[in-house]
Amino acid sequence: MAANFFCWTLNAGQQSACSWYRITVPMMEMAKQELVQVYEDDQKGDAKKSDLALLHSDIGHFYALTGEDVLHRMRSLKRVKPGHRAGESGSVDIYPPALIWDCDDNTDFVHPFNQTFAHMGVRGYPDAHLLEPGDGLEMKREDGKLIGAWVDGVTEYNGVTFDVARNLHDMKVRHEIMRTVHGVTVSSPMLAKYARDVIGCKNVYVFPNTISPDHYDKIRAVRTDKRVRVLWQGGMSHLIDWWPLRDALRTICEKYKDQFTFVVYGEYIDWLMDVVPTSMIEYHPWDQYPAYRLRRGLLNCDINLCPLVNNVFNAGKSAIKFYEGSIFADAPEATLAQRGHVFNEIKDGETGLLFTTPDEFVQKLGLLIEDADLRKRLGHAAHKWVLDNRTPEKTISGLFDFYAETRAKQKRDLGRPIIQPATHEQIMKVAQPLQR
Image (cartoon, rainbow, N blue to C red):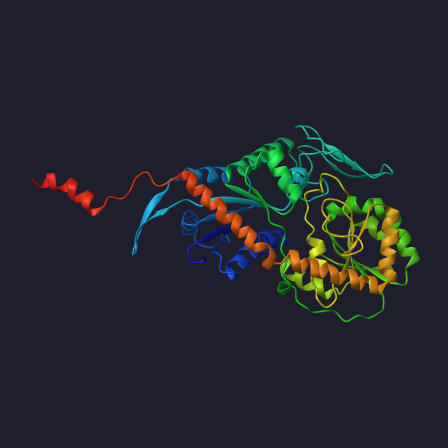
C-alpha cells in the first residue's frame, strides 16, 4: 500500500508532546508498517515543494491548526477539481488530498490557568459560561484569596493580550475549519462527542494517544534511599486539580513523612510546595519532549499520581499520563487517578486505583505507599493493558482504515474528471477535416 498512498503532514513544533503523539507517532508508525509514504513539512524547506507534495497526496493532515488563513487554505484545496496525469503506464486520474484535522484537547474550554488562555480563552470559571467582549474573570480559592485574574484588553501573557472578541472569532473560525475538512480525528470519546454534537462534524474518528515501548529509554537512576517515589508531572493548569486535595496531601505527608519522596516534574506550584515539607520534595523543571522521554524513566518512580477534577475543562483530555507511567516493562508505576471520563479505562483495583474524595485519596495513596506487592501487581497489569490496547500494533491500522475510507468517499463524491484527455483516434478525427 505504501507505494501508492501518500500522507502529507505539517509538523513545525517537533519538540512538544502534542506533536509527538498526534503527528510523529502515527505518521512514523504507518510508514513503518508500510501503509503510507509520508511527506513531513517542518516549515524549514522549500514551500513550493511542500505545496506540490500536499496537492499530490491522498491525505493532508493538519494538527490543531486554526486561523482565517488556514480556513482559506482548506476551502481552496476543496475547490480543486480532479484531473489527469500522464505516466509510463498511461493517464491516471488525480485528486486533491482528503483533509484531516486532528486535536487532542477541547480548546473551546481552555482553562484560565492554562498558558494559552490569553489567545484562546472564551469561558469563565468555574461554571464555564461563555464570555462576552468586555468581560473579565477572577479566580479565587475556597478561602476567598484571589489567585488569578484576566481583564479583557489589558492582561498580557507571553506577549499576547487577552482579547475576548478576538478569541470568540477565532473559535468560530476553528469550528468552521472542522466542518470544512473531510474528517476529524480526536484522542478521546468525549472529544468525538463534542465534535459531532456541538460543532457539527460529520466524520469523526477516535485515535487514542499511542505509545511505543521502544520510544522510552530503559535507563533508571540509582536509588540513594529506600523511600517510595511518588510522581506528579504537569503544568499550572492542574493547580485547580490539586487545590481540593491540599489537606489530604498534608495528611499523607504527616503520616508517611519518612517513607516517601514527592517527585514533581513540571510546574512548581508554590502553595502545593508549602503543604509538602521541603525534605520530601524532589523537583525537576519541565523539559522539551525528547529530553522528557529520557528523564521520565530516569526518575525511577513507584507511584504515578493523576488528579483531575471532573469539569468541562478537563473532560476532553486523554489518559496519556496513565499510559506513560505503565510503559516501563521492568518496573511499571502504579497509577492513582481521579474517577471520571478521562481515566475510565483504568479498572479500579486491577490496573490502577481510582479516587473520588480527598479521604479516598488519602486511603488509596496510603495503601500504595505501604504495599509494594500491590504496586507491583497494579503496575504490571496496567503495563499489559497498555500493550494490548495503546501501542501502534493495536491502534495504527484503525487510523489508516479511517484515512483510506475518508479518501475513498472524497473521490466518490468528486467523481471522475469532467475533462478527459483526448485519445489519438479523437485527435485524428478532428485533425483530418483540417488537413483538406
